Length: 73
Image (cartoon, rainbow, N blue to C red; front, side, top):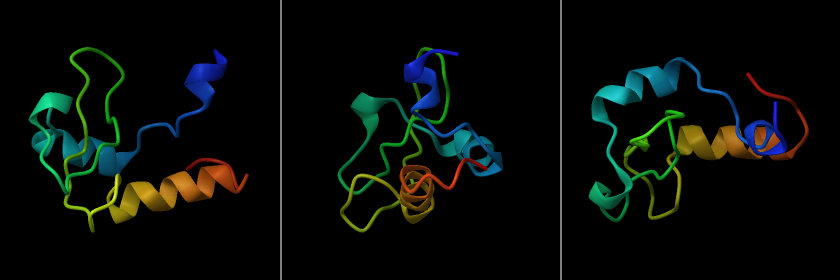
């Protein structure tokens, strides 16, 4: 596994559930989560509502969990 691949938290059930609502980057609107939820083109992004931030609450929590060194899910 490359360094790039280990920098991202692996997909989980939440990501799988979001696939039905996922959007391509160019289709995202302001206030939608920009977390990538698949690993192949075309890349799809979560698109869940945010509080004006880059990621939805779920993905923000996963990012903080990974940065803290607590491991993945």
